[in-house]
Structure formats: structure tokens, C-alpha cells
Amino acid sequence: MKNTIAERIQDFLKQFPPFSMLSKEELLKVAGQIRVLYLEKGAYVFEQDEKCHDEFYIVREGAVGLYRNSENSQNLVDICDAGDLFGLRIMIIKKNYRMAALASQESIVYAIPSSVFKPFIDENKEVNTFLLETFATHARNYYTETEKGKRIDNTISIDTAKDLSTLRTISYRKKPLTCTADAIVKDIAMEMNARKADAIIVVDEQKFPIGILTDSDLRAKVATGLFSATAVVTEVMTAPVKTYAKKITVAEAQIALIKNNISHLCITKDGTRNSKTVGVFSNHDLLVSFGNNPSILIKEIKRVKKIQRLRYIRKQVERLLTTYLEQDIPTMHILNLISEINDALVIRTIELSLEEMPSQPTVAFNFLVLGSQGRREQLLMTDQDNAIVFEDVEEAMYDETQTYFLELARIVTKNLHAIGFEYCPAEMMASNPRWCMSLSKWEEQFRTWMTTPSEESTLLSSIFFDFQSVYGDADMSNQLSDVVFDGVNKSKRFLGLLGVSALQKPSPLGFFKQFLVEQNGEHKDTFDIKTRAMMVLIDGARILALYHNLKGINNTLLRYEKLASLEPNNKELFESCAKAFRVLLKFRARQGILHKDSGRFIQLNTLSKNDKLKLKRCFKPIRDIQEVLRIRFQLKTFM
Figure 1 (cartoon, rainbow, N blue to C red):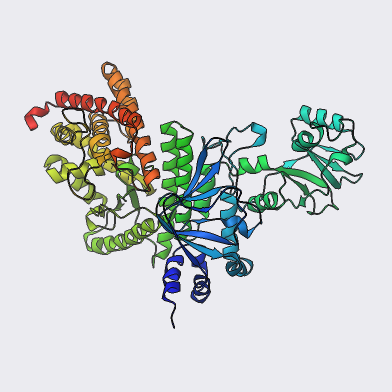
Figure 2: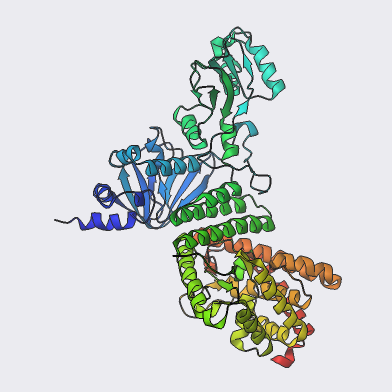
């Protein structure tokens, strides 16, 4: 008799790694042994310091938060939603949980016995590698003892960040501090302090390691009085020391440190204690390696061979964004970093999609991203907005050429959807023949929108005129940009019509200063932060950028920064618009992360009084920028 429950579990699991790496028969065997947990909101899967279970978990529906308890608070470390694994420590060690797993909402979780899945880890190299990466990435601590609880942060600069990944070999400290077996602890401590070292390797005459003394040993054994400062190092050191070869990977080093409950690894010439000491690798070095560094993700993106792996990386980007918001990193910095990663994801998706095509393109083309991604303002996963421009061809070849690029676009948009970029409901994607055309037809389309505008063309212009080249021949996008600015310079009437659209956006507040919410539909009684607040600021910056011929500046914050220098009399207004937009961007991102959605529609009853006041303070610049547009383009004549 068929086990229909197991088959349903199997159908779910096969969508996600590492289960997608198993055969149908293997996966059905695993599914048949799974326990299904139905969790009410607030129910624990396990608690901090609880003994590890003989199973790990994957979220089927809902969300499970991972929390680390401190003396007076419970701090959210991560949120796992559908397809996310947690509780993997049991695969490596048998120690108490370092975090609690708590259902953030009503959830269904699958509990997978370690005894059932362990054979696949041992025998399936792909599964083993995936779990090794996952464990090493998520098991790290966020703080380092040597920095007294200060969070390590090397997220700020892509240029200066190290090129790391979980599977590359470690960068250990060469020429480590060493001493002989007859050294005195006091002398060693002074030497460690002078050299700012957190450990010293005790070696014999051949430089073979026989033990290690760390700063934690000094605190626990000497500072407490258990041993005298005049003791010989062999009395206090930890022995035998754990040794590894130079080619150990970052992920393997992470596991070795946790499995052995140690803070340092001794690196020797051949990896054994019977060879020369060549370096040391510590928890601190590991934390630097695993610091929330966008270059790690970008490097991994470039190496990815399968689309499914890109989805896994994109989930890490969400965690990265959460960290940035928690650390209150400057908004422009967050936008730049997340945009670089998003661009890398799109580029790699196109490259992998081209490999799926039966042949390579015979003419040059340019893949454009539009809207929020085109403005480099897409922090959360939102709808796709993209287009393809291809080189002009003879009329007889046009249909064949367009058909090729439409098929490429279909594969690209499908793969982007698999990563997590939702399809555009209005089909403003390159897979739509309207948005996959030759350069000359795009130029003709842009000119038509500006010379004979309509309600639809005004709307489309506000989306398509914020385009950015991410792949292919960027000269094509530059030519389109020239067409836009040439059309604007010939007729300011078009800007006036764009201005009317900005003035007609629904107001955020009513007559009595209350929030105006949606009156019907799916999002009834919610506040639309995008349409009622952000879009007016975006529209105002775009219209004035076109008015001043600001080529190559699509980002709303950068547009206001440039406008402030061009119009000193309106500097204060433009700066207040930029400030309001920064607040709204971060507010929407936090709401999206909290509720696992786009953050666009906000339940006002979930906001604190302080949050509501912050939002309302952002609305004055909206009215002011609308007034600037009204006066400058004499919009009463258009209404």
C-alpha cells in the first residue's frame, strides 16, 4: 500500500537541497521516517542549553526563529522559513543547543532522524559538501572574546574585503609565537602581550608541537591562582595540541574548532604532530573569514553551476540585509552592497541561461533591469522588471532574431523566479514581446511615449526610464538614455505630464492627520508605503533629474544629493526628501523581513506609536516636493 503522507513529504523535500541531491527511492526512504510537528505560535522545537535531539529539522510551512538568550533578553539570530534547515549541529557533535528554536507563527516542521540521513552524508559527496557549507556558515558565533563582545564587521567595503568562501583553504597566521618546554608562564605572558598574540605553541627541538597555551588558559588557570605565574609552561599548557595540514578548508576548520571545543588549531607541515609547526588558526581568524562579507557571496555566485544554488545564496543576502539594518549601517552603503549582489545574481543567471540555449546569440544584446533594481534601490525580493535590447538586423531576420531572444528571456525570467524574484504581474519582463525589441524599435517606442503621451505611456515611462544595463553591450543602453534626454529637451510638456502623475498619487494622511489605508481588495485596511509615500519622492527626483539632464544618475538618494548642489535655494528641501526616503527604505525593509513579504502593505496596528510618528515625519517633504513640481511645471494647466 502506498504511503501517501510520505509521498507528499517527498514532493516537498525534493525542491530543496540537500534532498534534491538524492534519488527518488532514497528520498522516499527518508520521507517515510520523518515526524511531522504541528507548532502553535510560541512553541519551542528545542530550547537553548537543551541536549541535542537525534534529529534535525526543515520548515514545511510558517516560520521558526532561532534565538540566543542573554542575561536579560532573547535575541533573534535568524528566521527559518519554508525549505530552511536548522538543528544541524547533531550531525557533527553531541552537545547542548546553543540557541533556541521557537515558532514565530503557526508552523509545520519536519523532524528528520539523523540515523536515517547520516548514510547519505557519508556516501553522497554532493550532500556532504552542501551540509558542510551550511553548517560552517550558520554555526559561527557573532562575537569574539578578544574584541570584548564587539561585533566583527568587514561588510562595509567590497574593494577591501577578502576573497573567501567556505570551501577555500584557510588563511592561517604564519610564523606563530612559539616557546620551548622549559619556558616560564610569566615570561610567556609578557611575550604574548608584547606581540599581541592570543596563543603560543610549545615546541620541541625540531619545532614539532607538543602543546599550546592560550589567553583563555592564562585567565582560567593562572589568573585564578590554580597555577603560579612562575610555573613551567608544560604544567599549564593544553596537550596534545590539535594539528591540521595547510590545505584544510575554512568549513573544515570551523567544524574542527567546534567538534574539539577549542579556540586554536596548530598548522603543521604535513598535518601531524610529528612535523614542523608552520602556523596557527584561531576562532578569531575564522570569524574574520566568515564575517558578513558581500564579496564571499559574489565570489560564490560567480562559481555557481546550478540555479538552485543561487536561491540558497539569495537567502543569505536576506540575512546579510538583516545584519546591516541591525547595525544601522548607512542607507547608501546598504543599497550599494545589496545592489552589487543582485546584479551578480542576474548576471550569473543570464550566463547559466545562455548555456541552456541551443546556440549562442548571433548579434549583440543588452539585458536591462528596470524600476527599483534599475535605481539600485531593491533591498527586498520584489517583482521582476526587465527588458532586452538587441542589435538592429535586416527586416527579413527580425522575427527570427526576436524569437531567439524571447526564448532566452523566457529561460532567464524562469530562472530568476526560481531564485526568488517573482514574476511581474503586469508582465513587464523581457519575455514579453513588447519589451524585447531591437535598438531602433526601442528608440522609436521611447520617442512615441514622449511626443504623443497617454496615461499608459506616462506610467510606462516612469518605470522604463529608470533602466540600468547589467549584461551585454552597455552602449545600447547609453543610446537609449540619449534618446530620453533629447526628447525631454525638445519638449518640457512631457515632464509636466509626469508631474501630474506624481501629484495624483494617493495621499498618505487624511484631513485629521490620520493614516489613509486601502479601502478594499486583498490589502484592505493596510497602509501602502510604496504608493502613498515612496513613489512621490522617487517620481519627484526622476522628473527633476530629467529637467536638469542628470545622465547616469538613477538612484533617488543620489539624485536628491545632486539636485541640492544644482539648486541651492531648494537645498534644504532636497536634503529633507533624501532623509525621508532613507527612513522609508529602511522601514519598508524591516517590515518585509519581519513579515516575510515585500514590506509594501503595513498593518498599522502592529506599529508602535514611535514608529507611526517616524512615518508621519516623512510625509511633509512629500507635500513639499509636490508643490515644487506644481509650480515649476505650472501643473494646474494640465489637470
